[in-house]
Length: 289
Image: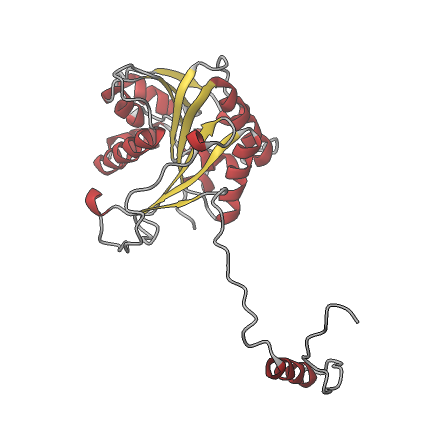
C-alpha cells in the first residue's frame, strides 16, 4: 500500500488528534519543515527593506512553517482543514492568525491584501476526490482563482509539493496559469530520489521580465548525488513552461541517392508499395520546367 498520506484518507481525517501530535513532536519533521519553509521564503523574493509583510501559509498545520515566517519578521495568516492540527497550533501559541477552512472551496480573503503566500506539502491534496462532490479541476480552479484575487499585484506564491506523477504536476500548473498566474517549477536535487524537492513558483500577473521564475542555485551542469546533503552542494534545476526550446540544426547530409535507395529497400522488405528505382530517383528538380 502507498505511504503517501493523501492517498490514505482526507486531510481532516488523516490528521486527527493522535497524528497531529505525533507529526508536531517529531524532530525530523520539524527540521524538514523549517528547511522547506526557509527555501519557500527565499523563492518569494520579498524586498529586503525591514518592513514586515502579511503572508499567507496555506495548509499551515500546527504552525511549524509559520514559525519560520515569524522568525523572519513577517505577519502571517494560516489556513488548514484539520481542526486537530490547528488545536496543536493554538497550544503552541503560534503568532499567526489561524483559519479553519478547505482551500479547495476558495479563500475568503479581501482582494489584494496578501503580500505573498507559501504552502508546504499541501497543494497535491486538491488532486484527490475524497468525496462524491469533489472534482479536482474545479477545486484547483476555485483555489487558484481566489488566491490570485487576494494577492497584491506582483506578489509571489511558492508551493512546495509532492505531485504523484507528471499528469498531476501538469494539472496543478495548468490550473494556476488559467487563473492568471505566471511562473514555473523549481526542482531542488533533480538527480536525487531522496532529496528531490519541487516548488511551484507563481507570480500574480501576466508573464514579464519581472515575473520570470527565479534561477536555481548551482545551475551550471554539476552533478547531484544521493549523498550531497549540504547546502553548499545544493543543485537546483528549473522547468519552466515558457522556456524557449533549443533549435535543432536541420541538415540534408546523408539524404542523397544512397540514402533514398536504402529507405526504399527497407519499405519493400516491410511489404509496402514502393515506386521502382530509376535514373531520376533522388535527382533534384529544377525550380520550374
